[in-house]
Length: 277
Image 1 (tube, helix red, strand yellow):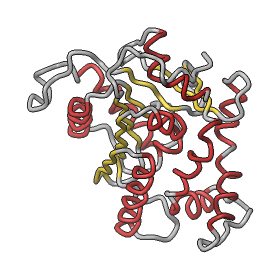
Image 2 (cartoon, one colour; image 1 turned 180 degrees about the vertical axis):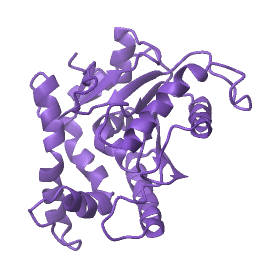
Image 3 (spheres, one colour; image 1 turned 90 degrees about the vertical axis):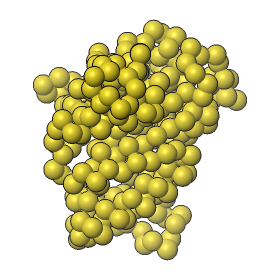
């Protein structure tokens, strides 16, 4: 009941709101913002998830073509569960650079979708693809209003609000939590979104992070969800502990100075008044 009351408040944006996420890989949107996206889905927002690469190297044994095809299917299933649109680009995973060609593509995507809120990675992150994605979005921000760039896509009159998804890296500039979102009410659904990305959460991440606890077999769905819940809860718990004010599970976002700076009322509307800041 509390959640319904919060998201039903009047807001200064269009109804429904439009949320666009640029992740470097097909599961990044769900990992870093799956709780907020679930809350937006409940509020009736229109959501589009863009993976800037094909995700084709995140596996210890599958070939690039096989993994790319599998991850497209996983992304489609997660998006369907969320009620979102999804677009996985063909850029090779692990080889992303912020080229002019891709900048134009980002500008075109923003103009065509006309989002109220754009989410992406910070440019300070452990993964080069994450950093490049953040740089692409940052460099597109001003240009979305310049008619002479990508002239076939009508320029926007107003910048969207842009926010970076949380990371824990301190150099050269630490993450600043401008918004902290309580995702406790939708945490199980957050886990369910990640469950769609089986190649990552049950295969690649346990391998690359050397998780000692064995992953339950694919035919034991309940045991897998229990294992996954225990595995992924660490991050939203850490966010809540560092930046929250009593939440059990939280996501955090840093408002970009390159997009439009929202008023307090606009920020509350975009983050559905689940903010603790």
